[in-house]
Length: 393
Ligand SMILES: Cc1ncc(COP(=O)(O)O)c(C=O)c1O
Image (tube, rainbow, N blue to C red):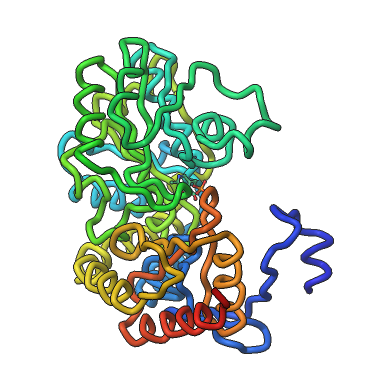
């Protein structure tokens, strides 16, 4: 299997982890030697209820018995998609009430950027340095990391980058700006949070100049930070909210939500303003609906904040310079990329899954399922401390 993996399946690096998966359950993933790995990554924030959650699996099975794909997005009334978008609206502040379901996070970003251009008739887009919004051409155009996009130029014109948390840079938002796109908490940059009312100030400046604010909550959204959406920690409601990852409960999804007035622009002048074959797929919408119901009806969100405190209490070590992030979206900042690599790779040998962040090589990602138990947290943090103790410093 390993040689076929390298021979036939396209790779994204020359050194993938290449663990061969047998099955997964709860907070554990098992390899084909039946070795158990405690999952502190949750498929990069994409499985908030852990693996094989019975409510998610049942929802998928029940839907699979009824129908799979029957028609392209938006034509037929399919209960899972309608109920999912209705439940999202129930938990969102006015005027965020209408949701377009897509196949991935990056497609939702594309849809949001298109909607902003269509609504304002402007072309200027403002994004932040070190931002990550996905890997298709539009999303890559607003990625604030030149090294990873240089080879794919030309990309979208009229994109200006500002420094996240820098108020002076907000002067770039003008009457030419269609939208400002920001991650509520910058993920790939190293889980960088908004400080000193920054997001509120972005919101005010957008209001002043008629620019739309897009908040990318593909990673912090759906309960990971202890609230359903990251923006609830700040006094800042976006015009377009983008979600994905955890919303699918382990199935591929993206979504962008806006007011009815804005969203309806995608169905006229031109009609079919954004179309997709599989967006809102019934199996995926059923999985997402079960996931969203569980997260909003259980105590998983307040518990995420308690689990954060437990992790912060356990992970105290001279080689951990800082723990960034909120809830169960945490990043350990170590003194060097070498140390971060050692922690990630040695922990995997010892049965704990950790991962990198895209643009911060000194960081170690901790984004476990929200369902992780305190005992599992204690066990995983114990492995991290043991690995750190084994590093000479
Ligand atoms: C903040 C953010 N935006 C967008 C994306 C892209 O989502 P997807 O990989 O589903 O296209 C990601 C994925 O890591 C992300 O973290």
